[in-house]
Image 1 (cartoon, rainbow over the protein chains, first blue to last red):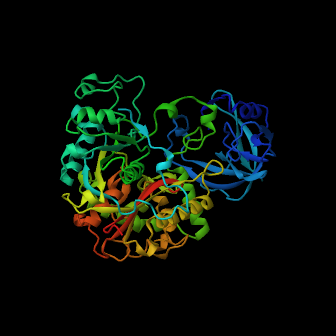
Image 2: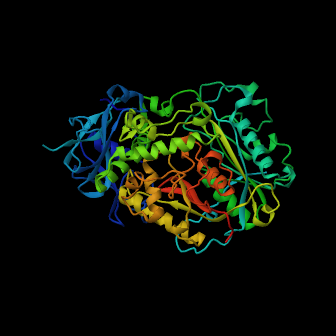
Image 3: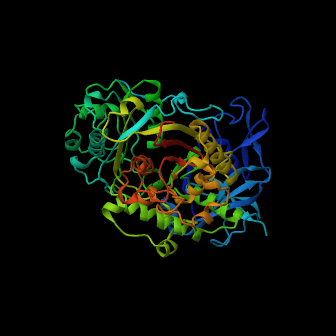
Length: 136
Length: 443
């Protein structure tokens, strides 16, 4: 399952660079001590851009929820339908979510609440993207 | 005339504002709709702009107002159902030039300015106030109601139009590219992960079912009832083009889009325009139709912590919305005769219903409520308009229905199980929308 390639931009470049190096990093406001995803130009709580830094995550999480995509708008993924599309919450902060196709998990047989760990997959242009795999 | 977007101050977004200062002083009188079509046929006669003019003139005629008495126009300039004019596609100038033009050739075809309307409706000679209520009809209604209340306009047209073009929904543009920008890839919605439009709602519904022990099958009576009501809505798409009942079996056998959202849980994108004429309660008395008074408008502006709203976030937001609706109108849930909250996607209607505490409902109750009599003949009419599910994507059938029900002009769809005195409509999303309370009485 090859995802669309990603062209990192100014806001998200640290995230994508870290992924290429096998690290999961999240934007964190050091003043509020609060993670946020997706990344934003300013902290969603204190509204300041001055204290945003990128913080390395543990790469551990849980499956919070999922759906099964049968009619996907993205051309590159249509050949892989149906596929799981799950929401993962990070153990570092369960309020922070990420998407996952849950590679290795059978379609519509998703253990909600199960522990997952991050892996990194190459997209169509070679940029790596964080993915999640159920911990055996 | 320069048309501005409505300032944030025109929306009532917080609790504790008390009863709306213009309660009962603004009324809806006239209604107009264009015919519906699935997509634009490429002709000048059937552009979104043409539909807009048709609907506006019908609303004026319906109210029995001299066009020269109209001094306001509020509309949503964004008209896409998800279809955007392809950058490499030539704009048909014969169609553009069939109308009085603005400096944007797509004006009247794939977007809509107040300037375009005024250039093409020469009978509107005295419009001094124009404003954009961007998002959908629910936004425009709130802005127009507030504008009439504040005295910025006394006789105001409210318009929402939709264009739909060839091609599958949301499958062109960035969905068809090999590479996406980094920020886009990390944003909610359509990303490199391939989520269809209904995916987020489907996940909230899945969480709801797990928490409360419910199932997708329990939606079937609601869906059948919505299509039934839609087929009694002669202005709607299904009634005009595909008068087919939706049985519970049809619903249960439908293909999945983003399981647990199936085909029928998604509304069908169409071309249509809808218009209303709002005025002061005083002036409304002399118009052709019975006034329907606005008791309150309220808006929600919820923000989720991360990518998708959780069930807890949705339920907190809809409960707050319900409280704001009642506070500003000076009523309670017990005063509602019926509800017409948004339904496109069907799988979030229960969040709106439970937030309203309609008929005493608490979180987790709605799907059981759907198994009872929710018809227009019963004591608890749910979505008598049939909504987007019953009549196609307009996001305004619910408003039209509230006005028509209270005026006694809903035809075969007229509620008989209760006397329709106070109704509420609005949306779109549980986490963000605009809501209006309509009443037969100004008090």
